Image (cartoon, rainbow, N blue to C red; front, side, top):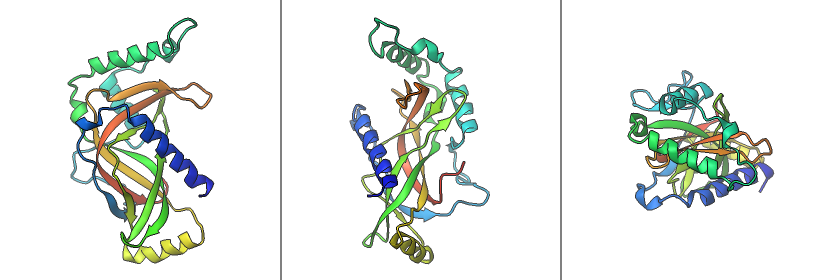
Length: 226
């Protein structure tokens, strides 16, 4: 497995391990992950006629957080000072925010967000390519936003058109990377819809993780649009 695919696989594995703490028995069955591989519309009108709140850019995410949360946390106040229990301040802050947003109408609003993907091996029986995926991180004025999808499909396969299949098979045979965008839709879970934390990349940056129960998956050819 090449380095890029390994990174995506590792990210997905970490995600699945971290998600086991949620009461998954309360969630619906996952959606089908065997879906067409689409081309991004020129006007980027991905949800014509559908009542979905798109959270695809930093500006989208900031507007949504302003409506739902009102104001960002004071990250400096959430660090653990010497002598205090590790993570106690973050835990208390998250519980307080959960209580304040209880019953907010945005918790029932369907939202859409990106993860990144790479086409893996071709599955002849499915007529498509397996999908290796990893999260997108978006820098915002609130902090670093990273969506956390729950109830991922059991199997994720991107099925290209008959016209595009030969080109993709040729690229795959040459060992080329084929980037795709994974467009998830769903609703925030009501009991712990946003998790505030700190990143572990050495910068200790504030991290905001909206937790979304997935109800649909779409695949778009090409890198995630910026």
